[in-house]
Amino acid sequence: MKKASVFIGRFQPFHLGHRFVLDHCRTETVYIGVGSSQYHHTFDNPFTFEERKKMIELGLADDFGTKYDIYPVPDIHDPPRWVNYVSMIIPPFSEVLTNNDFIRELFEEKGYIVY
Image (cartoon, rainbow, N blue to C red; front, side):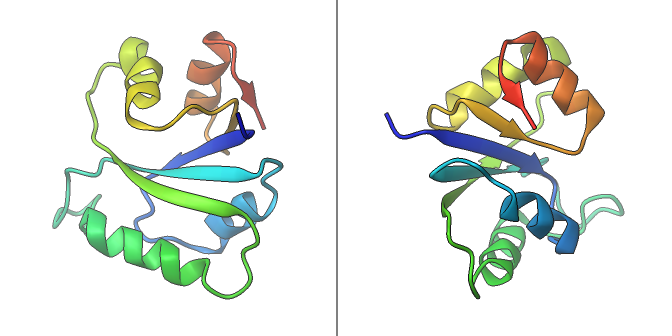
């Protein structure tokens, strides 16, 4: 199995901070999970999943050297089950990229390497 990581965010919009995290990916592949993917046209989530996906693709178009794929990750509003839920949506991964303390805690509790 190729070593893969996951990076989950709402990307409302995709910005240079997200790109910075992705540029420090240490795996051959990164799966980008677009959180709250079912929400759009609200104050907190103005963009649709397809719009966010396009922003990510454009933000990585120039010289991003890591293989990636983008997945919708709808909210389930159930933190204890969320990591298992993500694991069912996204292909197998061994590492997690995040700058979010809550996401870090949830994945570390399940034994993932988080950086």
